[in-house]
Length: 100
Image 1 (cartoon, rainbow, N blue to C red):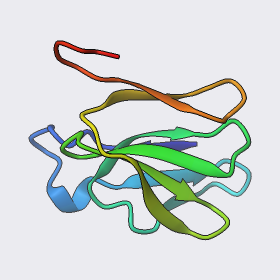
Image 2: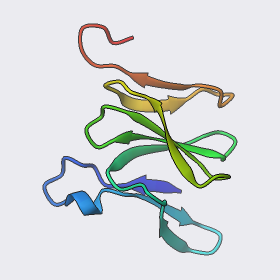
Image 3: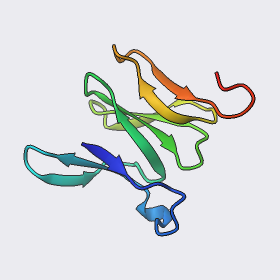
Image 4: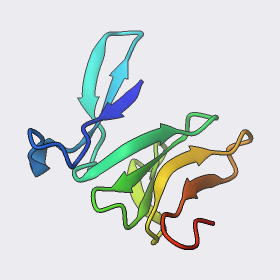
């Protein structure tokens, strides 16, 4: 299970905005490495990646469990990232006049 705090909550200090992973098999909670300032995490269908938004919603970041590293997937105003069924794409909503 993957989850985190919303960056705009008054109670969430910037250091508290991280992505947490709960391993239900062993009941262990851990912080995803280098996930400070990221939120809205979504696990890929194959389990290899996590897509997340930067706290300012200006970038979609991708975590690779094999390399244990983040990379920028897209630099765009984004909301509600969602993986395609086959895990090949990450869709997102682009607010404003051109929501495509």
